[in-house]
Length: 196
Image (cartoon, rainbow, N blue to C red; front, side, top):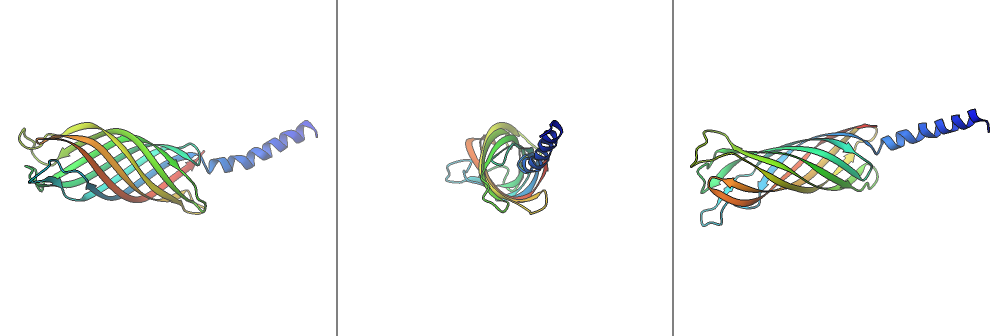
């Protein structure tokens, strides 16, 4: 085999291998929406301070390193209302989470892949309306985040369907409670992957 033939053979192998690798690697953009719920009250009673179920929006951008792992930046917004023994009863309460996550997934074939993820970041909690010492002072705290979901890649496209549940663990330090919180969001959405 001449040197030219060898070069052509290597080029042909590279041309075949590159699209296959690109199926596993890429930049991922995600948008999701769904519900919000809390699992821990702000106090122990007898008059509970807690929150109404609300909604959540999520956006993410990251890199899928291979078919098993991805690194993602995560922004999650949720809105709910105060209930029970709180000065901000029926007022809107907003949570803004910004962080990162490592996602581990296992492809099952036909585009379906369940995944687990974990990470951390900062959560900012704020209230609509006038804030006073007696009422509600916004705060920002470290938050741990973890969850699970699954994705289904739509055949012959770069689009995927997503469904996931996410837990957010942080400490509430306002109005006048000081208590660990564990919030849950459950969402569905779309992803778009640009291979490289």
